[in-house]
Image (cartoon, rainbow, N blue to C red; front, side):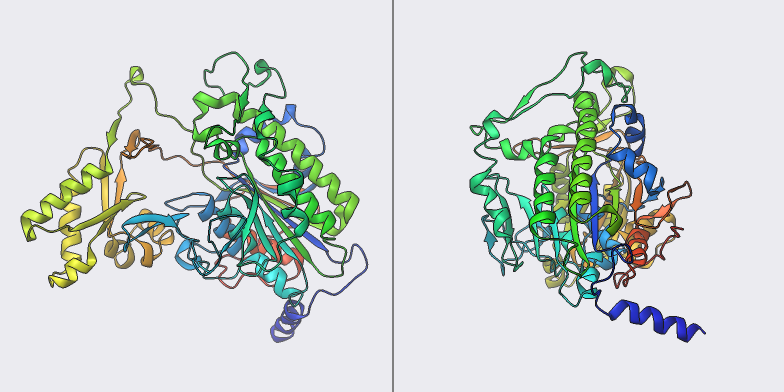
Length: 525
């Protein structure tokens, strides 16, 4: 009996999704990720929403209220890759959006690939860093390559990782020009989208675009932090070299993304050609201009209100084009939040500042005293310290012994909670914390030492912008909503692993799960 079932499932997985009567199988799947979306804010702002956006999904879909990411480092690239591959960074190959390049001793995008030229951009990216297949890949494979898969987001990482290896195209907004761009890694850049760079260019409108709240400031009461009791108005002048980067952190960028997504669905005839098509959309609900909720609380709430309206527009377009009864839609968060600001000193909460450059310098001086006047430490990136492994090899020193000595030295620094060596994580993982560190790393790009800092401290990067990272360990409430034909609405309060999203959507689509899935599909019936 089991062999018969396995044969049927295999047949469903490999036979291309041919034309069928409406309502029998989905013709379009829409994947939506919202960077830093928080469930608690979403529910608290429902009184300001319409009936066709978030409320429609919450009332018509299967709602999983507690999505667990359980990874040591989170950004939108890690989250997007984990969602679409159904597996952890250790297997999918994406431990962070940027990694430390040992050769140049600088950080770089993990997606940088000199083999492929930028299309309307100087950026050279590809999806080759992904080590496993994605849900998008499996959609493409199910139709024997005839289904169309597109991805659109403000940034390259979200778009490329959601699009996967074999998408027709992944599109994003260039930081320098404001154009919609892609790379030659993709062979189907829609001419009607690239034409927008001339007929509806962001650069021709950016000077006139103003972000003001939809409602009066006193109506935004979902975030109970003290904020100034007046409204806001943000402009974006081309005279400012960072205007497009700032624009991409505003609520207005979600409207631009929605416009392009709708154009892809309508002009691309998605869901109308007899093969399963897919469009993946990346939105943002992160604090404006990389600030915090104490500074931009009203802006953040307005972002949710405007995103609700953009979702309503998107759903209306899908209804008029292919029909919601022929479409599977899922929405999820990226499972982290960067908007928690440092408490003022008057509140007497323990705090301090950790300077990575100074820590690296002190560690190098310590190793010089032990082993000679050389540059023993290569750099610091994402709370990881990288040793000069080439030099250590040339001096015929034991790398593990050096790591242990470095850990013993670093643990005495102010603000350091604990230090983990790479071998401790990979070979001697003994608790939940080291297990989580192992899930989130990729040995090829991992440092030799992982520095855990005391909560409440700030990491101060002595760069041109004097960038600061506030250390705060708190779980962010994230949700996963699945709206599909013939799947009854229900709410599921029990926790679900983020790696279960891809196989759950795959089950509803009746296609294979990505090849690295580490979780089984959740029940939707």
